[in-house]
Amino acid sequence: MVDATEVYFLGLRWTHFLAGITWIGLLYYFNFVQVPTFKELDAATKNVLIPKLVKRALRYFRWSAVVTVLVGWLFFFSRFALDSAGGSVNLARTWWYISILSGGLIGTFMLMNVWGVIWRNQRRVIQATEALAKGTPAPPDMGKWGKQALIASRMNLALSLPLLFFMGAASHLTLALGG
Amino acid sequence: MPWAFETRMGFVWATVITVVFILSIWAVVVTGNLAPVIVPIVAYFGFLGWVNRVK
Image (cartoon, rainbow over all chains, first blue to last red; front, side, top):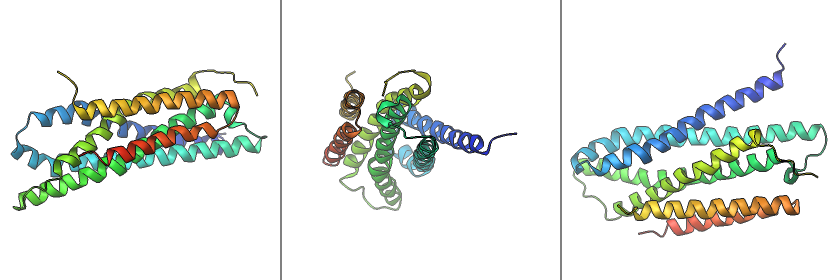
């Protein structure tokens, strides 16, 4: 007989992995494939691709980030509730909690970068590109929007390394902290 | 070819936040208190304040 609690946690884990792979996969696509390719394209081609390809990729990118982080926190609080039911848990003395909290916080920063910096700026770039096709001149801030979005994207690329380390280390690195 | 400004600054901020994170984890383990976790959160909001002023 399968335990309902196990099914619940496995479902959360599976959803977290699926959304996380989608998110980080698209992050690597943007940084390693799209950004260098766009540097080699002329303006007319970019004006076609931005409202089509980039808009679609960003939709999966930003929503998979939301699912990854929300399901991750749901997993964390569910596990904490379960462990607390069996006695008090000292978060600061249990490696799994320290490591998963570190990864979770880094992931939350990355989600804030996705929505607060990358998407906020890219949405303006897409809107300006669509308006450009209808004859409206490009706004002077377009360069600034692209620059801010790219900084946050590069930061997320680098932060994905400690993020994955802490997520993996929670279950695959044994540290006895005492207490 | 030197790295672009965006790449350099993105990596610098990610490094700063990672180092601050590792130090805060060390402080959490030593003190047995979760309070030091606030430091990387403050560092991240420093990044948000900075990136929104980039021209």
